[in-house]
Image (cartoon, rainbow, N blue to C red; front, side, top):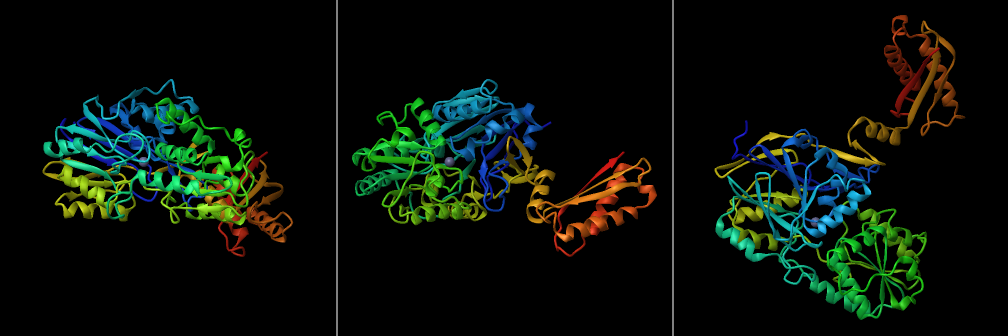
Length: 547
Ligand SMILES: [Zn+2]
């Protein structure tokens, strides 16, 4: 039995290059999950577009899982819910905006009726099982981002989620400084804090600065203007819409995720003084100088609207000589090559590409080193657990804490951290892993299917087929095919086939009775027939037909 006052923290995704946030807290016998996000794969995983944290550890304890709290509506914090919920089966707690975004996703996954969603107002207090919880509104690049406060028998833990300081966030309130100061006076055991942008020094730039700059910039542009940004950044979408209106341009949105987010935002009362956006079909009846397009595809996603516009294969929208594309976004690490390819295609066609290197058209939604230092000075936690970042971000965050006499604790995914006032220590390790969304299935990243596919991709496959009689003696000639490795007409195919036939003849009688041993021996025979000439190690398989 666990002591009812025990407190543990366990990150199951979110440290490392691909942030798929899934955090777990255990208090006594109960588990609480915080966020459940997807990651987008970089170049090292070409077969997988969407990655998810493997929830096996908590799925095995799902009876003790009392709830899942979502801190904000970004994909890397809620994108996995619709895929993993069947393994979790617990109620979900989120603000109205995050709940609206989540409901659309659950609807698409035919899960809307099953998943109990409790809507918590920003800044609201709520109980989930034995967990005494409250939200603190923070500024981020999506509406209604919340820090989560856990009041536990061991003390107060503040899980910041993604946040920054911005006195003029444009949409929603600024980070609730008074609430953090009050916690500081109460005394905080630990802070689990976002590390994404801590290596940037000084305070964060404001969305208000971006709004002024984009408004000035768009007023100077001729021809069509397209702006790409994250669909969930409602403040930015509002910034662009207001800049468009100031330049006498009407706004059309291009791309499904923008349309979905627009609906969710308007449902929750955002964009209230912005006229409805035109559809991409309607855009074509607007003169070029009076049109502004908000377009998906800021990360170079191959099927996105902007990638297709860049090669002029978009069904409705085309841009050309003298038109403009503004990247109101940053390149997420891993996407650089894809983004640059799209920008290159645009430039080749005479389109003017403007990025945050040219003008202040983007600010990060994540706390800078300066922001983090200011928050730590307010809250004065005893311990800091840096999360959400690569190792160099986590260590930079830890260094700031150390300067302020806050004890940092660095964790890898799967580390189970016991949190006691007297000591924070890793007491155990949970299994972790990545799942890949492959078509409609979730597959283990390092499991058999994807390992085989990677091997086929780089080395091809060789398939040998042969028929035998009841005693296991060859009937007719074996066949060998090697798609992705050898053409059928290649003389090498005939040589391998012949040698495979000879090697099959040499298989000892005692191995021929049982299909399993016979097949294994035949595989070895096929590998030997293939030899070293091709200097490849393809996937090898055989079909044995006993007739
Ligand atoms: Zn975020």
